[in-house]
Image 1: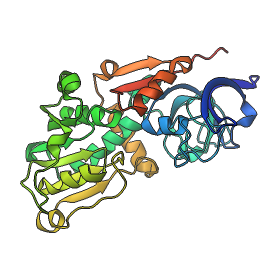
Image 2: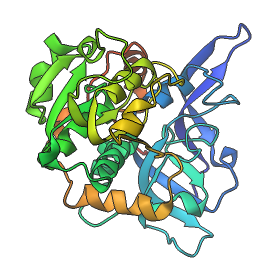
Image 3: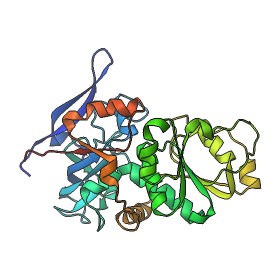
Image 4: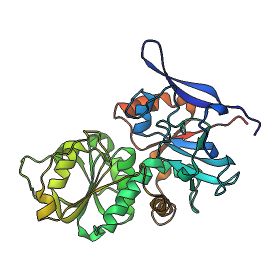
Length: 336
């Protein structure tokens, strides 16, 4: 290819230790030496991206760096025979955007084993409205369904319901005919929004926390998708009904879980992790096919705001402050 540089959001640390974000031209030669070069058309903003863009060493160890754990576009070059120039593909998770230059750049170069062919029924734009958040939400729903939590079993709780994962979990569960309770700290501002995407009931997140510290509490739901972790996850588990399932994927409230064994041995509650970052490729393709087919949502544009590299900065600040709702889609405007 003739092009030698591309635009990217570059995060770097200055001499005072401050992390700065700027849109810059980067040489293609700066990308890692992997098998598949992809011309990125869309990416999306996730909380992990905002952490990487802020200098969080738990996410990204080395700077300068380009975040973006999601990317969708067309193959430009490939030494992996599974992919050819022009193939439409998706890359989410693995190390993309963490320590490997990510989707906030117009190009990425990644291992072939990270690349998912775009499934029939899904556009590149739609795939990035879902992104890692939608994939994670769908994976959580899949785990509930395949562990026997059926729509007629009872209520299903979604915590952090206005976030990317939470809002898409509400929508997918509703499409699958579950009765969804959405928990959020933004009831006054977002109740109408959550009901519009399928929530039957919207409660303040503080209402999830019980008044008692008993090891086993009255059942309030038969399943849950918890996106925040910590003491919220403990409260969710202790109020889950017999043979219920709790799928967890977040740690905003902490990565430690202090809970009781009684929900597990007296009610048969299952706690299932959502390993969306490194799940097997066979499962990854299965979930993407569900999102392209029977779980495809018709509300995607309603919950999405499109931005360019040049106006991504305020969205990063918003998600760091916990003020983000729905999905932020990044569209690259290639000059070539």
